[in-house]
Every structure is written in C-alpha cells, then in structure tokens.
Image (cartoon, rainbow, N blue to C red):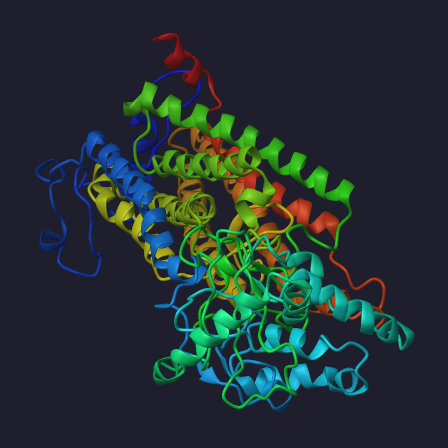
Length: 634
C-alpha cells in the first residue's frame, strides 16, 4: 500500500494501509482482497490478481549495481564521443584534406601557383563562393594601393595546395603588413577598417615558420647569398615539372631545404599558366625552419583560425545574426566583465550548495536503505542525478571557462564532440539533468500507482528495473545520437542549444516540457485520489485523517519545490530561443537594432539558479528527525 512514515515514530506503514482499506471496503468493495493487486478492474478478478509474495522482490543491491553500471558506462562515453568527433577538430592531414583543384577565380589565376583546395580557412565550400567575397577587394587591387595585396588576398581565399605538403601554408606576417600599410589608409578614408579575420598578428613571421612572402624572398636573394639557392631551386623545379603535373601539383614546385650556411629554403613556383610579368619575383618565397616540412609541428595561424582545428569539408557553417562565418567570442559579448565575474560566482555558489545537499540525501539513503521504499525511492535517484549535475558545474569552476567552453582560437565551441573536458561536463550536466526529469516522472507515476490504483510498495518495486531502463536509456540514446554540443558563453559549460536555436528547441525545451506535463498529470491524478480517500474517511467517521493530511502536505510542498523551478527554467529557455536572433543581429550590425535589443542578465542568472535549486531542495523529503536518528546509529 502507498504510505509514508511520520517524523515522530516508526509505524511500518500500517496506519495509512488501514485508512485505504476502510475507504475501499465502503466504496469499492475490495476488502476481500487485502494482499492482491487488481491489474485491470474491468477484467475477471481471478485472472487479474496475483500474489505479491510469489513475485521475486528486487533487492537494493540490484538497483545499486545498476546505477554503478550507468556511471561506469558514462565514464567511457567521453572517449567514444570525442573519438567520433576527432576528425572534425583534430589536425588536418591529407587524408582529411580535400583534393587539389585548379584555381578558377579570375583575380587569382596568375599569382604564381595554380592549385588550391576548398573549403578554405573562411569556410567557403566552393571557389564560386570564395570568389564572390574576394572580388569585393578588386577595386583596391586595380588601383594598386599595394603590389602585395593581390597575392595576399589569394593566399587567404585560395590557399596553395601541394600533394607533397599536407598542411595549410599561409602568407607571412610581413606580406600582410605591407598590404595593410599600403591599402589600410585608403580603406579608412572611405570608412572601412582592415578585416579582423585577416589580422597580420595571426600570421607567422618570415624565417621562423613556414609561410609565403615572394617580395621579401626576392629582396634577400638580390642582396646576395640567395642566387645559388634560387638557381638550384629553378633547376630542380624544371626537372620535376612533368612528374609534379601528373600528380596534380603545381608545376615547378618544390620545397627547398635549409643549407648548412643557414639560408632559408624557397619555393620557386611559377604555375603553368603564369609568366614572369604576372609574378616578377619568380617564386612564392616560402620561408621555413630548416625546410623540414615533416619535422617539427608548426602552429600556423591564419585569419584567427588555427590550422590544427580547421574543420573538414563536412563542417557546418557558423552564422551569427545571419552573418556567415561569424563566431561569438569565448565570453558573452552581451554582458560586462563585472557581470561575467558575478555569473561565475553565482553558478559556483549554487553548484556547491546543490552538491552538499544532494550528497547528504544520497548518504542518508546508504545509511538507512530499508527506510526508503517505493514509491518514494525515486527521490533518491533524482538527488543522485543532481549531485552529478553539480559536479559538472564544479568541474567547470575548477578547470576554468576557457578550458571547457572555448576552443584554441579564442571562440566559443560550436557543435563539437570534444575535447574530453567539454564532453565530460556535457555528459554530467545534460545527461543527468534529463535523467533527473525522467525520475521525476517516475516518482509521480509511482505515487499515482499507490494512491490512485492502490498498488502496494512491493508491487511497485517489482517493476524497478523498468524504471531504471527508462531513466537511463532515454537520455543515453539522445547523447549518443547527438553531435551538437556547444559552449555556454555565460556559464562556461558545454551543453546543447547555446548557439543553435533548433538544438535548443529539439533537445532541451521539448523534452523538458514533455516530462513536466506527464509528471504533473500523474501528480494531479494522485492528489485527486488522496482527496477522495480523505473525504470518504471523514464521511464515514472511521478514524483520524491527520497522518493522511500531513502526507498530502509533504507531497504538495515537494511538488511545488520541483514544478515551480522546472517551469521557470523552461520559461527562461523559451525567452532565450525567441529573442536570440534579435540579440545576435544587434551585435553584428550596430545601429540596425534598438539599443535595448540585448538579453536580460537577470533571466540568465535566474535560469542557472533554478536549474540547481531543484537539487538543493530535493532533500526536503529527508529533513526530519528520522534522518538524525539514522545518522546517530552509525
């Protein structure tokens, strides 16, 4: 029977059972079946009843080991998920790199090489797409504000592709600075700034890392010491022209090696469709450390995006406010530094309090396992879920915002499946957060079985394995099928839907709404049954209803402490998904939107508070004198 112990003394669930049996004998004539369960009241009684004692009673140990298996499985999941996403975020090698293709953009056809690859570092999938953007600079190239501008632009939008070298080869910082110094003043005169994505500070310096600067290379060779190297490179290029062309490599291309004298190697490449007039320097001027392409790993930076994390051709483009290839910074641009600092403190405070409260609840369960029987046992698993959710937030607090939610280029993570730290935080916060919602549904369902259908605790416990299967399997399948983990620029965790409204609606809002509606429905149905039993007992005048009323109050308070925060969290997510496009558009286009088109800081702080306060108050059910008695027995 559905029952609870009073806080004053142990009564072994007898009184409430008697109350229900009295109401049954008056209204439902079930007094002849004190130890059986009616599976279907419309069927024959003999076919629908069974003896609870004949059913094998699931042990506490079985549930404990089931929970251990879930946690163990999840500890292995980050490796599985991270491994699945390594091809997206790992170093770009030739096996991931697209094949070389001939340059078809008119402005870049005669610049000293004729082969490129797509997507480029700006995530242009095709040359047509890259050409539409690079040709916006054609007027500057036409007026020759800088003789280096054309080669620099083409090196960015149509990067050189060589079968013999499987990494991105950027322009040198010196080349970029000459182009910027020549054309930057003219651009500023007409109200344009030098593009942020082409910052010269992100490019390697000539002579320290592999990069291209034909003008500087030619200047050094003209000063002396470079003539022999240039002629040697030219002769070697001529001998290997035919073989290189057959492999799709730009003709007359070869990486030179550093001589014993310390001169830098060069690449004298003048594509088959080029001529001395198109490239007076006679080569690309590739500078490197020792010329050893396959030796020391280079950390080449291009346009603010590290080559080591440049996505492959299957990547999904990033858009912010409708602007393609535009990513948010590591920290939220909508809030001030002071607000971001307080957000870290706020999330850290409630995650620690949630961890302490839920740890006490779970510890009390292990101290006195026999005390927590169905239908109240799901409260323990709900608390255990929030314990692990709080651990996820604490890991972020210890590791730091940048280590969890940001990539190596200083941008927030977008639809990633790694690295391990981000994946671990995501699993703890998202998986166990969703599992806690399912345990809330199970808790409401078991209350309904006990109060509404008159199931006993042993009958409910006999289905515990199915409860665990639903609670752990559903979010686990969602996690495995998901490759949409992104960073939260406010809290600094990895979650779902922080950068994608579609993912927020499908993987967060929709499940939470479904779980809340189902759980609340079972809860209300159980309350209706309890009120009906209470009224029957009062009408018959057969006993007191004090204990039943106290039970109803406890259930009501606990339900309030869960449903209200859960509803507020959903409301915050709905607010976020509804206005996010306006915030991003106002950020990408200053002056296009009103000044108040920015998120409300209070709503975000309320969301994090409500997410964690549920776990903090989940121990309400054990706040009684019996808990102190259980701990005193140790």
